[in-house]
Image (tube, rainbow, N blue to C red; front, side, top):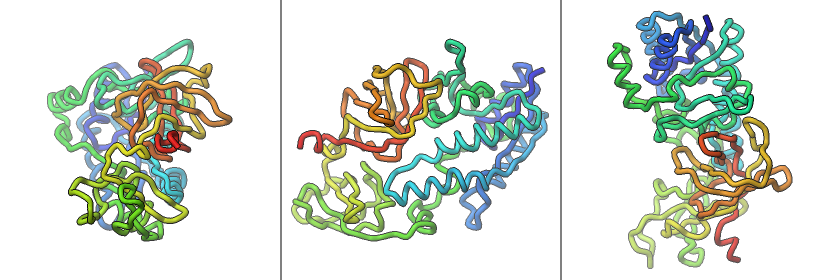
Length: 365
């Protein structure tokens, strides 16, 4: 009988994943990962999550292991997060967490425990194409999480199962309630554990020094209309938290972050939600990870620059050591540091961090 160690987070997705594996005849054990040391203000609820995981495994009748990967998380995920923000970029630590922790540290730990495979509650699928283990989109398009899995290696996928691949979230909750799982109605976790529900700005200021500066309007000849608290707190397209109001000769429409000038420490904003400087058709991605090896380029495919975005048609080619993505339609608020993830039909080809964005204002100059 094949042995599978399922990641049990305390949430309903991982719980139903483990139950489905049992129904399929696998020998299942659970593993709870401590990826962040419990903080004093209680925003990261790892202890409560662990108790939920214990209750789930007791109900399912499976053993629960626990492993502390907090050192690896700080070194490989959290430090990257800080370095990217310090450089004025917008990182996605969830992508790195999957690559470095869940599908590397967890996988290796499970193999040492004698597992044949690991399983998680991600909404994704693994399929075989021409002898390769491929990452496929979930049946639930609204919950599909392949965007966050685009940096996982093919070898890790070969040892992985995604038991929720063919069902949607309402069905997951229905199953959990029907079989009596104690967490069937538990609220989905949102955001990153080390931030939790706390104010992002207050958290980041504990680790990086803020440098306040001018907010200037692209609509009023560069007029200073406010002060920002530090460029690291803002990202292109952001609307909330700018603290701008009562600008002379401006109406009451909201303001949007257009770009960040790190050299001058200036935050540029506009009331035009589709300002040409916020739109781009042309981006370059560095350190691109092809899950099944690089395909023949150039090629046509689709891409996402954020989770849950509708896939956008594009042309992909190689420029030096970077991947160039040329979209058919302008994309709004593409930010360096975010991931661009490529798809060919149902297959996720891989992804890379956006290194450079060429906006429409630049193209018209």
